[in-house]
Image (cartoon, rainbow, N blue to C red; front, side, top):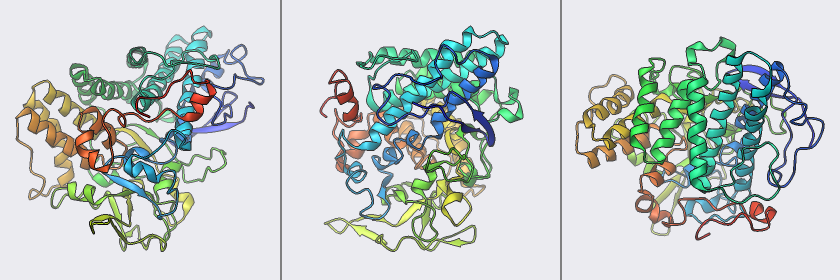
Amino acid sequence: MKTENSKITIGLKWIIVFPLAISISCSDFLEKKLQGEVTQQNFPTSASDALLATNAVYKTLRRSSYHSGLFPILDIMSDDARKGSNPTDQAATIGPYDSFEHVPGESSLAGWWNTLYEGIKWANVVVISVPKISMDENLKKRYVGEARFLRALYYFDLMRAWGAVPLVTVADPPTRLARGPKADIAALIKDDLLFAIANLPTKNEYATNDNGRATKDAARALMARYALFQKDYASAEQYSLEVINSGLYGLESQFANTNSVTGAGGIESVFEIGALPFEDFFGSDLGGNQYANVQGVRGTPNRGWGFNRPTPSLEAAFEPGDPRLELTIIRLGEVLDGITIAGDGSTPDQTFDSNGILQERECYNQKVWTPGNNVPTQWGHTKRIIRYADVLLMAAEALAQNNKSIQALLHLNKVRERARQGNAAILPDITVTDKALLLDRIFQERRVELALEGHRFWDLVRSDRAAQVLGPLGFKAGKHELLPVPQSEIDITQGLLGQNDNW
């Protein structure tokens, strides 16, 4: 391995990350040991090193493969989206996710797996080495808290996607690793988040040039999300309400700004990946985010590849008059920022199945739109990992599960109030208090509020609704709740790392 000068963005500020940013190939985490001049013996050893090492843990967020291996397979596996792009582009590799026919050898799975472990390795360096450095104790705890927050984020994605995975808490792991008990992974996530909550500053306690770093409330919100997956509704209620009661967050007045460039770093953003409008195809780390480029309008204007096409099912999920529909989906002929969306000539305007039922029409994810008419400007999308509307809906869900329907309605209806944009004729407040019916309405609200943001598939799985909703698309209970372990990782460990059930 070689070291390189690297940059990440914290908010929109450049921070040089050197020398911990180590170039790592897709097949290396369980295959190769750290090599080269930078080792845990000589880095980090000073307070300035500690900052650089901490910044490097954020670098994983800048990898295109951090986003489920580049392609938005989590949305594609839900009922909200299809592969998109033109019919032939990635038809053999990403197309199978439409019908749950994906296989362990699909390359983006290995890219996602290795990227998450890359981030964990860098986090482990901070957690192990920074406490040994002679420096300001509070700053030391903050750096370790940031690293542990990010390690929890990366392990949470691994656990959701693959279940029991190798548990690594050292910087130089052995080549062959078996799965750790899932309970141990869950315990590490919880311990990391508790440490982060205890030691990270709140959003308003950071200096301006540190905007975008992990905060106490980002850790609380992630803890609430984790608790919902564990069906620990008491903890989910506690931590989501702590974020709400902090008074530091709110809903953007305009839904259009929840994912826009204008709303980046705004009142609704609890944790996000800052971005600048520069292409990063060759790992030059200019600050761009390929997440939006992969989904950008294909053809005219040329903004990207056009993957993650919204489905007719998603369109039908919005209530009549809901303004969020037109702010979620870009249609052919629509004019955005003075630019007419003509689309891709090689993509059919409409596609029907063998029974004549509309499967998809050419349209695009508006939530990743950035002003501009060329490819580089599409890289300037700031990806929201946690936003306040999600926190409100997590609180509503936890409260409903805890038989506190009246309080749950308060948070649910805040989201609907913002959505209606002052129009009292649409999106009336929900008043149902029956637990099952209220949970149905909360999950429905999550679908339309958070559409195409990577939540729907996980929501269906964790609420035990996936088989019912996704069964007609090919989902099989007992198999598709988890992804297949990448075949390359099984091969590296010579079979020690086994495959998930029914794969």
